[in-house]
Image 1 (spheres, helix red, strand yellow):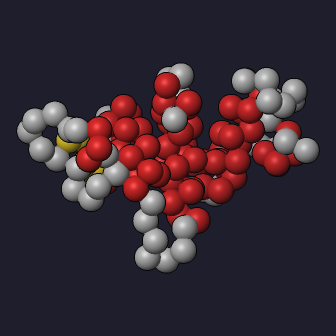
Image 2: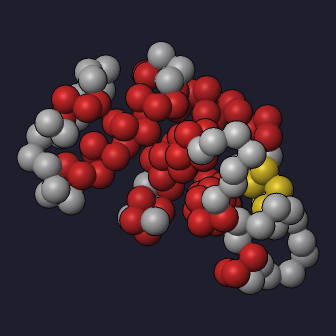
Length: 120
């Protein structure tokens, strides 16, 4: 959530997509879905699926946000290019960058380097 609140919705979306992809098959986490929905809306990669306001409690429920699938996939492809297409590497980089920028760790991650190296 911090990533969205600080204007880093793109980084947050990478992290939440990786977290969702890491769940066991058939398992959905509504909390992750709520963050995904907010990031999609913030980035213009999705729209409200209903004409009226979205109640906060509805975020994460199927059908609340309609993703712009082609736009989202094109965006994701561009974002993952520096990480050789790896969503996991991109998410680790985003988390390491957030940790560095908030003072949790000292060294900022270097793009193209192993993102886990900054955390050690």
